[in-house]
Length: 594
Image (cartoon, rainbow, N blue to C red; front, side, top):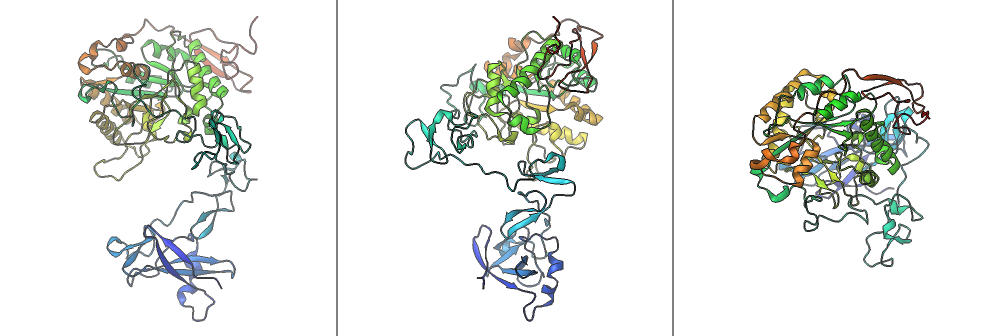
């Protein structure tokens, strides 16, 4: 006969005796007779009341006793002096429990965090729970979520492979100096850990490679070694460059757009950057455009560059598979980013070497491989890493030393090693509709990912609240990052952004600048009183000449890499032989003229 079950309830760690009443026992009451009905579609680890009468101590849960083929109700009673909090699912002091009049939690539908393909389960405190994906979907073991069946390729596996970890922390050294222990006890040179190639027989040397665990990770910030203009860091990322008084720091705002530049959005850019809106130094406000290749009109990109805006790269293919970016090889990142830059330089005729920024699609950072490529290819900065919403925003930093915040999202693949690259960190926006009242909500990195923003009025509040968050603290640059389609989805969004811009440029302490201009100010911190003559911001003050062409070539092109597709390439330059793509970024590699 099995012993009584013991349950650990909540933080009070109280052991509560459990009595199970089987339906087939003599004298079973009517409640047990209805157990099947009460337990239909109810999780086995959910506690609920049968009555609101009494002292609020008694709850039950469903216990499907497979050995006798029936469903039973297992009763639980909190110790004397305590009551059961139905929402928190734990015993607590009676004065803290406000829901003794509820039979069940209002949150009865809970999402299982770990499930497998249809007909599988996850572990709960009541045992193994069966979970089934909705019809038409299957469970992806690697992604740990339901997905369309056609996209799931691991239904022949029973579980997600468990990775063996190396033994990095021991009371006494287990390996000679300069070596570390693999999970199986094998000793391997420390420098071989997290180099992208398994060297331990159990491959454990590649399984602990985060910013916090990589044995060869970048050191913590050392302000005595990290000195401007080439290096900048601070312990928590919030320190102002040059230790300037916050009142003398310009509030820089960066407006960035991701994706193709074409007829769908050119009119929006012309309306926002109409040539009439100026910063306090008399220069036009500027934006940064992270350009993806497919469907881009390169004559329009050329004109944006002529007008002083910054052009950066957003990849060549913009592939939809997030793992392609997170787990991309050095060569993948080289082909995507250096290839995209080559295409822009050639077909937008940008020859001044000014394309020096990268943003990863879906913000899926490629770890050390991405940044190794960037350093080799002389990219100056990345603008893909996000920082969680905090009381004080974070300033951009260089990656010579360890990043000053947790790797938030980004596929968890932030760079752990030292790299001579600037990180133009994306501070999350506070999207609460009423910051003085609303409960805490997670921040959002792209404006269009703030899903609760549904009206122009809400968008206006978002802009001004986040401006005040930055302006009234350390004045770290405020990033407003968009996809043009979101701004165009409702006319009021565009109108509120323009209204906000015009409100800000009426001030003497706010500047709309590019990513490169932010870096130039940080390399030479300059107080507001002297900023009107800051030469590094004067370089792109005026437009350069006239548009290169009024009627660009509309080149209908194909490529072996995209069979069956004919794509138009708009450029003021000569049409290439093929549509530029990964293996042929110049467009004349497959059938080059002799």
